Image (tube, rainbow, N blue to C red; front, side, top):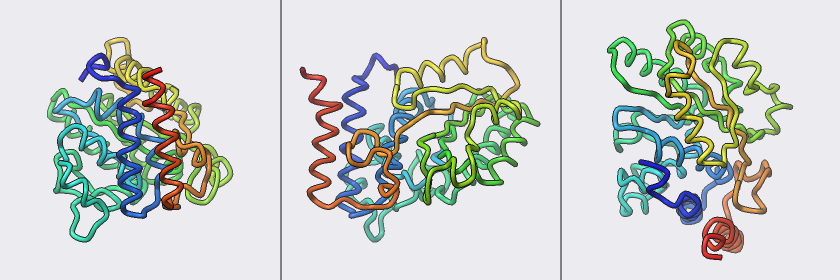
Length: 274
C-alpha cells in the first residue's frame, strides 16, 4: 500500500481511537506501550509489509495496537475484535499463534521476537527468496541476552533481509531504561557490532516509510542486518499519558477514557478539518 493511498494523519487518529476503545472495554493496561509504537506499525505493517514478508511484534504487551492494525487490514473482523480480552477470545492480552494470518507466533515473553525473526530471515536466505522480516521491539527488550545472541547470529550469517525496529520511548516496566540497565538501544552500540543503523522520529510515519524504502534499495549496505532506532513517546497522543511510567500498567476510568479520546480527536482528526 502506498502512502498516497490513505490519509496518514487520519489513520493515526482512527487506530488510536480503536485501541483506546479496546483497552477501555477490557479495563486493561499497557495503553502507553501501544500508543508509542502504533505509528511504527502503520509504517511497517500497514504501508510496507508485502505478502511474502513477516512482521513480528516482539513487545507483545502492545497487542491491542497490533489487533487494531490487523483489523484495518481486514485480517481480523470487527466481530472478532469485539471479543478482545474476553473469555474464549482469539485476541488475548499478548498475541497468541495459529489464530490469525498476521500473528504467526506467540510473543510478549520479551527477548524472544528477535531470535524467531532471525530464524525466519535465515530460512529465507537459505531458500533464496525475496522475503523480508520486520521485528518490532521495545528498548527495554534490548536488555535481554537472547537479543544479543540473535543479533550476532544475524551478523554472522549476513541477514540483510532482517529489519529490526526499536520503539525507543525511554521507559520500561520499573523505570527509565537509562537507569535500569543503561542505554542498550544506543545507536553507537548497534553500529559497533556491525548492524546497518539509522535513527528516525518514530511518530513521523512518512519518515519511517522513507527510511524503510532506503534500507531496501541498492544503495543500502549489503550483507548487513538493519536496525531502525525510532525515538518515540510513551502514551503518544494522550496528554496525561505521555512520558508517564504508570501508563505502562494502568487501565482508564470513564473520565480518563473520555479525555483520551478527546485528545486524540483534537490532534489527529479535528486538526485535519481546520
